[in-house]
Image 1 (cartoon, rainbow, N blue to C red):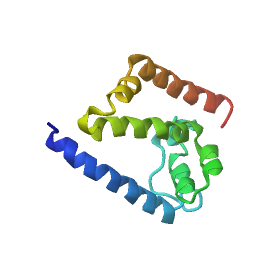
Image 2: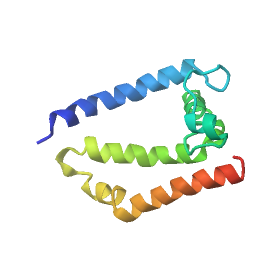
Image 3: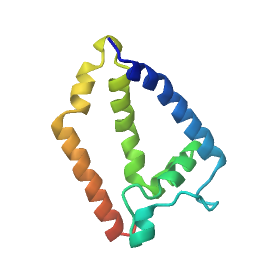
Length: 129
């Protein structure tokens, strides 16, 4: 039996994605001064793993995948994993996706993702990506 939160999120999540897509289609943080800026970058002058995400989302909303990759490789490459995690968590009716869920949330996969996250943080600042 699905909980009320699961039902709400299974409806709200696509609406949030569509809203973000529309927002970033009309607002381009690469061109306009955007009110939300990275506090880590403002404090340290280095990039956090998520720096460039807003510009990447705007580029994706316009269909510019290579430009989105140039803003934040790791974020763009993480989107499929994030979508799979949401799919198997909130849309696994009849437990049809349990095999995929075991893979997506396997401790080795999660640890690898965390290691890659921190490696990206270090590499992007060393190479100034």
